[in-house]
Image (cartoon, rainbow, N blue to C red):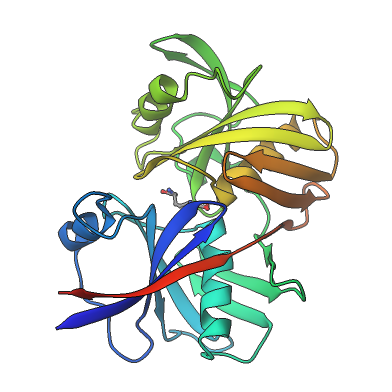
Length: 275
Ligand SMILES: N[C@@H](CCC[C@H](N)C(=O)O)C(=O)O
């Protein structure tokens, strides 16, 4: 038996995308890890599975799996690729797409230039939601193998820790990233962002992702960086976030309203694999 898939990316954060609207997707973490392997498999940061909706008022359900096989709640670059996938494949004619994810319903808009704008909802700073076993604060000091760091913690549907760094190039991503990802205070692990404020409208960012290690871009990581730096009054309401794979436009007017992310989504090739 073969499984058809589409290889896509959002700023180099790459995905295997499977249309499971007609045939149910029934594969476990071991199989997903094999496909994700960059030497022996297809190679990707996340697997996206498009399914029929389970509730009224939405067109699709889409599920997200990290390269380590874990199923997660949200993926910003994945959301944009999902929108382009269902539109380009003719699964919908709508340029405004309502989709359910494991963290709730989100709305995506395909723009005239092919980019996708996503209403990512309101950032949630409640530590219990991430979960993060601390009382609510704006900054949390934590010990790491390379000394104390101060983090902000926010949920964009999935959990994020954000650190301010002087320069993203020299940030200790390989040490602090995996250390915080599996820190006991984050019982469901966490994505870790390293943000450099160039000025109030421009941030440079690297993200060590839960379950996939450092990626070329993380959409929810960019949203989380915006939320935390906005809370710390280091940025304005419109910010360009530059990741190693390219730029995202993020807009947030602060608490009480949704955060918006806009950026590209590209198809690389169509494939088929023996299963
Ligand atoms: N690359 C993604 C985030 C994917 C999920 C994340 N690794 C998690 O475990 O929460 C993005 O673009 O947001």
